[in-house]
Length: 169
Picture 1 (tube, rainbow, N blue to C red):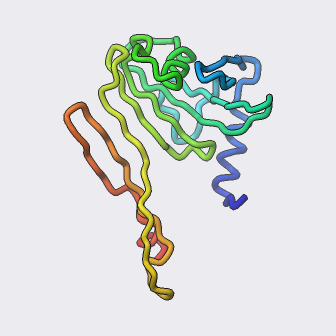
Picture 2 (picture 1 turned 90 degrees about the vertical axis):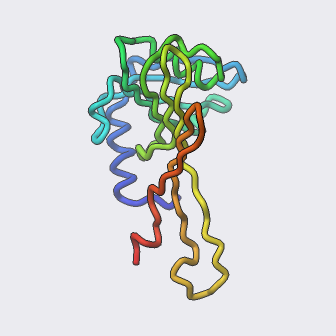
């Protein structure tokens, strides 16, 4: 596994922030089992109302995980059921109003959904576009452009987030 020091530090912070006493087990409609628990505020994510950890199980072993944050527009506390309704692709998101963001264990944002009274109004996804340069000594050979794609009810908006090649030149 190719992990740098910063990523290892983020994993360590996540491990020490997990509330193991609040761990709950659920079965998704797909029959996949998941564990959900509270997470103490993480560096860089302190302004959210709630942070949760989601662990996907296969044969009772954790196979992947997500950190999920909630930024509420109204008072709310039924976070586990919102997470389940998102993963089960239910239309009703428990009348939640606010932003639900999904992160990998390194706390890099992957997906953001904004809801108004349980209805999805905005969706943002981190997408990548690989540079397919065939030149052996090209400065852009092997580079990845990352885009944050936000979809609104009336169309798409693309924004360049990061270009690894420009950052390393």
